Image (tube, rainbow, N blue to C red):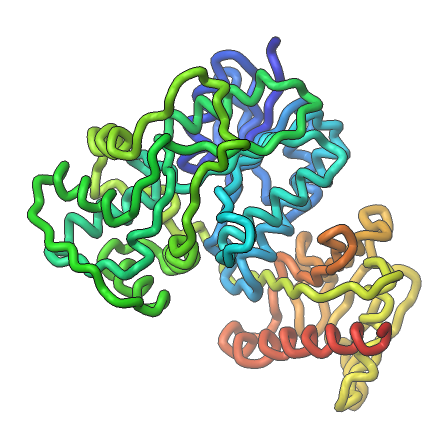
Length: 455
């Protein structure tokens, strides 16, 4: 049966290969941040997943949706917030768009989770949170959990290969001896494709990985053998994660935003749970040594992996997200209303908020000056999400996409207040050291106000 399939993350390491595999049998909609020329059986659509409107347009007409997005690098000149919050906003937009467009099934490539009771890393916790979002939705979802994906253009593989190539002596802190079960890139592609054979109403979670666990130190030793390099590996004491990350970034030229979360996630064992083992391919996956050997055949040190490339940053554009607890009995609409009430009470009380139908004016009291103008978008808002467009003022340029939103997450237990595509009117350097810092402080004060007023 020919399906119309949308792939979010289609320009990534896994996404590009998956699109190539799917287009032979299905119609594919490939989502990308920038416009691309369509090809036979592949329609490229520009889509910024931080925009719900973009996501709705991107998923229009599809039946099945793949979600392969794990972006840890900022796409804006200033990004205030954690990658975990940004990941959740993008996934939540994708899910809302999928529901609106009647998507029948979601297939999500997540991350292998440590054993129950083991402390998780922020990187893996983020993937678990997105997984939970999809599984608890009204759309049947299949989750494939993978740890390291080994392939010639994989970021983790490049980090290991470049480390082995460039360092004659490799100090190995305890996390390098952690056991995991990586998977070869073509094995994960076949597994993702095999998920299409599941019933559309299936809700499943599978672990994928090679049969025999292996440590990161042993993988580096295997690479040294393939490179025919004599390397001295020395077991070393525990090294602070930031120091390990700094050394690896310097040696491999990988970006900090990628390396730091990955290193923190290597201290926990990531192994396939027997009751969740994915065996639909009716064959064994390649071992880690075989996967490394296959990846070496096409490895090109001078070819920069996709994940190493810094995304094209929009100049002087701001994205900011702050997560806070949502008091029981309140929704996003209540929080938006309380935010308007809170600002005039903030000490020193120099801000006045005037609401005129759908227009909100933030005014400086003495002398009177309109700092910010927002337009409420009732047609794009609901009880669980409130949207306001930025329409100008002394502190903001009027743009088509600048917006403030209050969005419920975690089944209504928390809320994220976020600004997107905001373009300040102040000179950039002045904005960074004034308005940007004040905004984060104000949001922290609002979180306290919300908690205290409704306790």
